[in-house]
Length: 273
Image 1: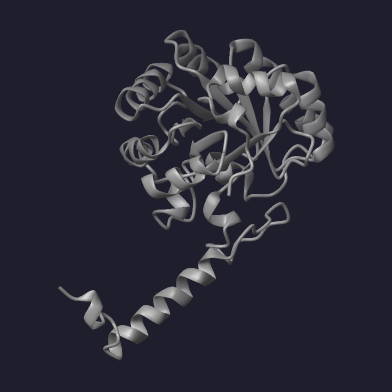
Image 2: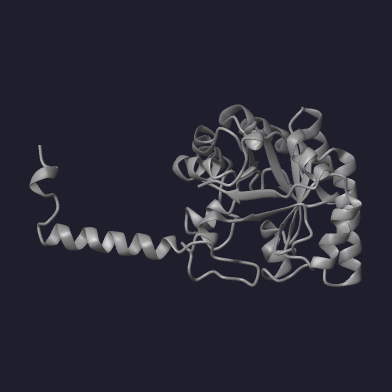
């Protein structure tokens, strides 16, 4: 049963997300990549659903997020939007569709908005993507920023380790967060950075911070839904908590089905026409 109140059932918008920060209300975020999961997550009271390029890993089996295409993202996002009544739906711009070319960035963001019905897009990076962010915002498309560990830059980073542990990178992250706020981004995801730095960024900004592996001081939290449900049992970094063991339940249920099919106990007489 959902614990959120009747008062909070109104549609979540980018304005509502900012109001939640101002009111000190934490923002609950999860990913979703299909209609069925989106409907369940939305009904549970999640405020912000991200159609992440992590679909490349979770739904398509790639090792990184890099191979996923804009057409793939649009397909996933269409299903999610159809399943959502309340939550804000944000869609990742995938790798190669906004870096270095503001015209392509705008074209990609417009396609997402027109073809999916989502409410906003998310981009990874700071000053280096400034022109792309400006072009998208100038077209009236809300932008969520993403700093810290940016998975699309995994090859540059050499892995998925904690970012901004040193003073120089921490200062740069703060500068980028303030720049992205000044440009007009409505929120910023902070991934896998020291909690003290996330707290400082959160205090400096008037827009919400959404943390993943960034401590409890951010304005909200986000996890990949399959990870937090225990459907990806081999993946459990320090910041991950399993809120369910759905993977085990699915395997057990399918095992029962296989057994009953082979034993001819399914379907029974009452399950036949």
